[in-house]
Image 1: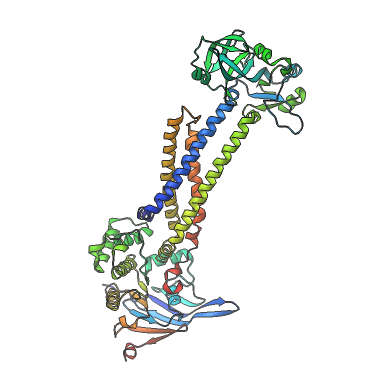
Image 2: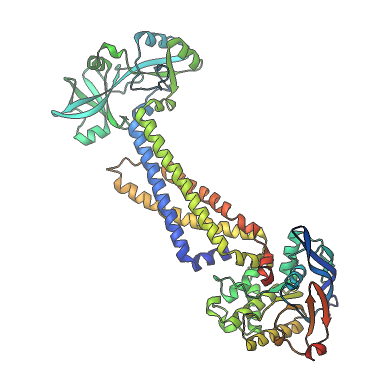
Length: 355
Length: 236
């Protein structure tokens, strides 16, 4: 690093530009990671926090994708499901979008209709009471004990829970009888089936016997339309940004190495081993990435904290440290591709007549 | 003091040829040459005569297609790439036409860099570098970068750098071509005195006969063939 550090300082204008570019890309990648996670949670947290390991849905028609929005659980399927080997509990959940009233003010909400006392039902749901998400409570200043209106029925708020959002709309857990009343008998027993399984559960046999399709809780998220579209788009943008950063870093170090070819030839002529020069050059790239990536990550952290009240940004190891580490690793790969020239420089070119 | 009688460099029947389309270019033909420790030998010749190829072979940058190369008595003709690199670091000093100093390093750091190539970060290495810069008259500017030095000073730093590894053989490539006559003569005088003081074998390639002294040994390269020329003949 003897030469690397001195080169960094000597060509600080060029490296500052490169570091700024890395910082900006890292800022974008970290913010997008936090936003992807935040938006994802807004779409899925009510499902990911279910006390169930499998979620079963109606088998889609040929050519259609599995979807929670079009799924319907029939009474026959429910009865079959409850008798399958390895199924400890099978609780229907009725899911529908609606407007509830809070102090006569309408508010969008997703109803999760469950049977009070069922394994999947949050504590507090009863014929006369509901459980609401903390987002809804915060937005409308609702407290435990307040009353909300659901399809003309008054329900007391028994509890307020975190992580209860579906397709970006806060969830209200209500008794399934009320959900059926608002959706009619055509809606069946529910929209999805939450399963708690034990040893002996056979997914294929379950699907075959019930006519449903059961997925693990995490796999079932792809059946939430808004989540898969949104997550796919944001992930694609992140991947593209990381690929762009590898190209930008690779291009910079290619130009930088070309500019240094004379120096490298001389160093090789006076006895520098290629490994020494590679370590020095990679150390320089690593330092640039750590400084640029670190600055970008710090800026993203600050920005994330500042906007966390207004924008669904999640700050966690997965959304901060992982993208930062990925940027450094991918950047090093880009730099390595450029540093092939360090290997190929011919020390002969240090001699006047050989140039 | 015991003096090493082994020649710094011995080339025997060295030939280098390159493929050029369907034919061959003979850059060196049957070159036999010895540079003793303490000897200062200049090689002249027109462009394309093989001077750089000769330096490349002597400096282990190029393997000859025939003949043998001995460095300090050791046959290094078939040395592998890693061994050649190590030999260049320990036994050979290069002074280039343009000093090719690293822009980011001070004069002192240019020399420390050579020590660091060998993993030497010691204070002794720094003291050695300072002594060398002192010997070439640059103690006052050792903390300046190349951009702040004159052409002559840069070339002196290049010479000090070449001596940092205490080489037995000094290879000098057109050292005066970027300097005016007076500075060119001064550089050659410095090289000559260093050759004597440090018992180097010095092989200098130059176009510029005017910077050489009347007593310097000169060999001429023409079309890759070497002919040593007595100093008196050259002077006459």
